[in-house]
Amino acid sequence: MKTILMNMVMIYDRYNKKVLVLDKKKKHGWEGLTFPGGHVEKIESFNDSAIREIKEETNLNVFNLKLKGFIQWYVKDNVDERHVGILYYTEDFTGNLIEDNIEGKLFWMDLDEFINMPNKSDSMDDCMKIYLDEFTEIVNYFEKDKKLDIKYFE
Image 1 (cartoon, rainbow, N blue to C red):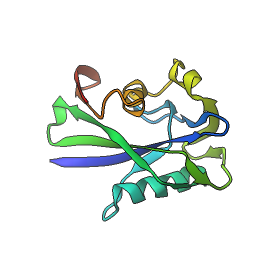
Image 2: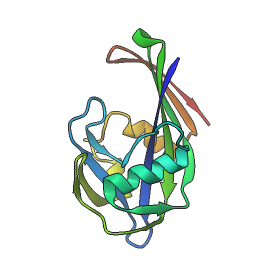
Image 3: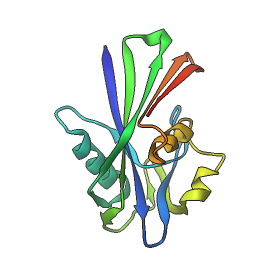
Image 4: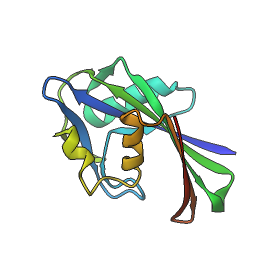
């Protein structure tokens, strides 16, 4: 089975009480408001991949990443492939944010405001259940573009 590994990091500015949000450009299933992240490359630790992706997308250096949990997607039509998202959180960062990049626009937003935004990317509501410590793992089952089932694990 082919496994595609991805990461995402909620960067929280504890002084201003805001999270860094990416308004992602059109990309199937992830357009809309999300947190920065990307794919894990060969021979790269999950932690190192998250640090690299954040630097590439935001120009920020992140430290002290805390593993929050995992989100997975299985597509019934393609049983030989699964996607795994590794979700991290940090309040420790340095650098100068680059607001516009190839992925979209970055900006700081109040966490409660972000949670209530209607234009988040497809799986962000589920990811927020992990970031808010409701669950540590969520598994989504799809057939084509239709969600068949979802399982939550504490």
